[in-house]
Image (cartoon, rainbow, N blue to C red; front, side, top):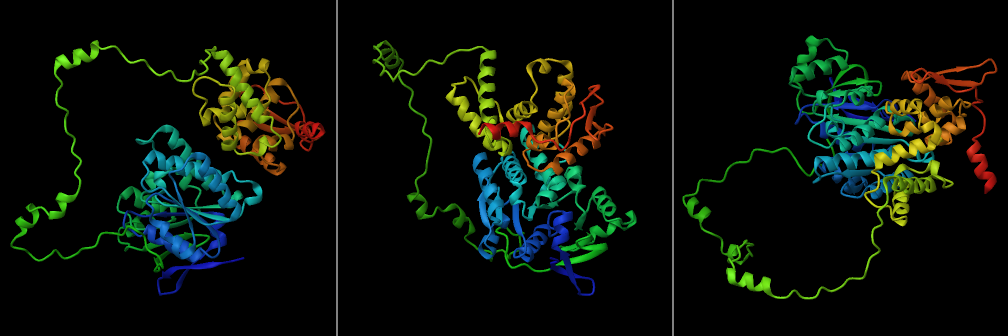
Length: 503
């Protein structure tokens, strides 16, 4: 279904049309300095497309929560636990409800963490819920910064990874990214590069004007025009907008942000008694309680000595707790591995999200009374990837496997389990895993996606995929100096077959 929404007018007064269906497939980047009208543009886009497509807005300033009154968007407060955000995101996709993730009032670290968790949960939703969603991220440079800032490295990686997934791999899952930024130089290049549609607003710095001109295919001598754009005026280019750079003036909106640009207001008339007005307290001020911190009076030394010389009162004995059992690092790691094995042995463990598995893992660690802090979520994901590879203890102690672990760091966390599954088969000299086995390691039932993953590894220069004379697949690892034995790509998943037989 082809739907064109009205974004405003072009030169001559003709309507500026944006093809929503094309936008879902090609994504959009909006750039402009503060005050250029980016938020107004996003609001116009959201209002015009609200009846046609589900929307998710990542809102760092809480400006878009007013959409809830007019268009029924659900407002989600970002100050929630990870489990709550994951559950809400899953239900958002399941029930196709538009929402605004409001991050107002959170610190930068917390904003990045909440946005990363929420976007990853949208990305990892079950295949049956891959309905089209317009994901709008305002001030995208906050969540996908080009360089590290004062935020923690963990929060930056989480947020940047989620934004990369949205823009690079979200299309297959129905997620269409629309990102807005003040400066292209502040935005991570791999995030900005995936957009095929552009709306460039007023810009003053030479480097940003030159980059905007390059993205629009314009001569650098024409870059000066970006300084002269009025507020709400943009230059559009892309398959969903125009095949040639086209000046567009954004139309009016029905809702308004809670925060607006400052407006000049006349000062009050000059008053003669202004000093009395300022320095004379209001009578109501005396009725308000004023909290004052009063320093305690110093105690005499004789009183302190007398108190110390008195016998101490008998302490009330609390119910005895089980003493913490001190165990060695090897025993603790063994308990953690047992808990992890129980979690992954579940019948549906391969198709549950990492967040769900992590919560189950923490509960099992508490049941076993594992001392010390449990592994963090990134460390847990790494353990899951290694466990799903099926590597045995003898192979895990070899130098080849250590090299394979290092190589797996070159792919994203969700692909490491697949990479290590094939790598351990090569190191051990086993047959190449089938599409069904690779799909299960990735958490899906799609054999086609499994083949695409191997193609992705080959594009990254990590593997070489070829076939023998019988047409069986072989995966070679140049950095490991080994390859798998020929394997039938269409063979069933042996582990799943054994589980079904046992049940």
